Image 1: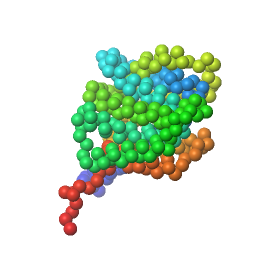
Image 2 (image 1 turned 30 degrees about the vertical axis):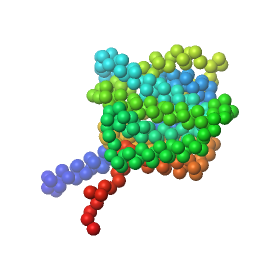
Image 3 (image 1 turned 60 degrees about the vertical axis):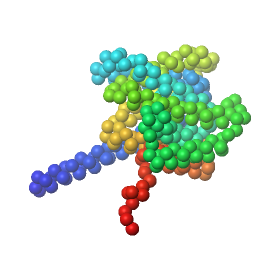
Image 4 (image 1 turned 135 degrees about the vertical axis):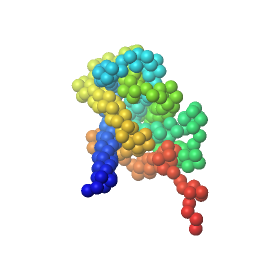
Length: 317
């Protein structure tokens, strides 16, 4: 084999191995984040919304902080603690509390479909805040995505309290508020935390979210101590779905690039709905599936993962 052929073969093998690695991380992350809705639901039933979110971020902080210390990044965390702590309220504290609240009234599948709009809200907020003006294709995607949200929300517009005293309509709005917070967090991170080691941002954000939720969680702590199953659910969502998931997510960004990493939010609802059907006996309706497809298509266009062919790019007749 000549050197050029050997080099080409080596490069092809490396590319194939890299593709397998990022694809494995992609599916692992989707499966892990899909399970977070199930675990949050199990914990929220006994803990309540705010304590569930607080325990989740506290466990994640305890898990991530030693990793920061082992990598010698504590000085960086101390230097930038204000901004990393603040972003923790936007990307963890408020959203986790919103989802824990919502999961007391709506199915995990519905919550996960609404969560798939995060990139769409991120694109909209980047346009408004960072002046990242979308192309006509991305603008069309925003319109399609919001139409899908409207379709899904229309099916849950009842504001009549359910068995848990929470109306489905308020639960849907809580999920959308969480998505808006994620979008603001992404733009804030891009503007003020660019170049920060991802592990520092992850750990600092979880510490900040823990501090922000501590007092409200103690105030609303359940009178009766939750059982072992609820504690195990929050341990799983804190370590697996938050701590480990951050590590996998940042590795996916490094190996596959941000667009592919972003696309994981489209696959999360598949796993979330599967867990809901198998473990909670939830029902997936054709309307939910149709709305989810509209949201995914709109979000893919809004984030640039899909592009409409422009007139200039079409070949001549």
